Length: 481
Picture 1 (cartoon, rainbow, N blue to C red):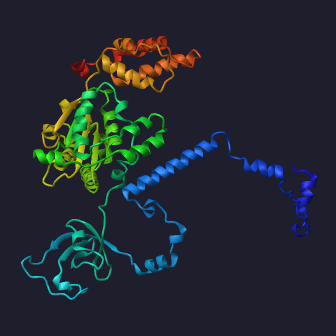
Picture 2: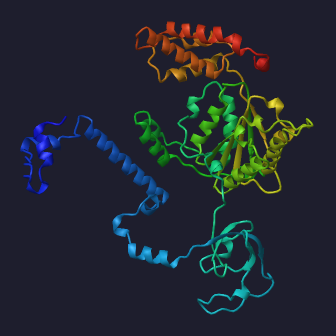
């Protein structure tokens, strides 16, 4: 229950209440407020932030990016009156699709026009548009659209009165397909992948060589060792010469490979290499899980594949990674029940998009699977998948490399013999070796120690490798052992 004084104050008339006295801050309080946020590291952090802003500004200047293109314009450039007038002049448009372009006779001479005069509607190309649920119309272009902006099959915005084409529209992509695009680059690099040096070189020949040629400036490579991760990424973007070089293949008269199949037992680094590729290149990376294309209704999986490649063609360069492709790429057969017909339709659409009547464009395709023997031969033929890269079990040197990679982020003793531990893990995959490092850390935590010793690693090998062999040694993967 509230105190009596507070209750009396609550019942009193607010107009008759006296204003509460506010004590002003004294000099000591003001000094305390001024020192807020000025810790021992605040000054250094502020200097680093200013340096990052300066480097980002230099990057934008070299790339020709203006401040208006990076976000909201500064307040001194706001013009609310002009924006309101422009919104009042622009009327809502109707969405249609251009199905055909009726060109004029190419041999006919162009009409004589005065300076600044535009050709009449009868002297322009005609466009057949299909307005959904209404009708088809033969229309002309608006004043702000060039003939080179419109192509057959493109979505366009038309005026609601005379149906003139006012603006070209981007392709309509399903939201579930758009979410497959990887927005942020993964933090995995080729230095984080061990035991598959030859596989990485084969993968880089297909993906990186046709897209970019990277050269690191020596002074910057020395500075990268002591800079933070964020500043390192900015300086790499500033000093890496990412130059498109398709002329290498043009000089030889060959087309670069367009597809790679990554196959091997689980845990050997197939998906990890794909993440490193996404980190290395500036192309749009799209990741697709094979089971995501298996839909309930007929034709939904094939539609998603079409929209997937349509979205990739709209980018300057794109890499599509199909993980667990055996979910939709199995060999075709007829079981009499028709249960797998929808999956086979999805695979046929994928085959058509890989190497069909229409050109694929600057799109690289990566596929990963654990069961290459179950895939359809039409999916693996050259022209669709030009290169097959096998990720086998790492050798002793590769296993030691993988152990050192995972131990870099751990607090370990310096005298640990990683080569000995690698020899104690025969036929182990990269995922199992990572589990060994994790279990070694767990043994150190149980004994209340802050550093992992070689004894912990040996105990982890006994737990993960020795006791787990009876579960992992199945007849399915005997060919890799």
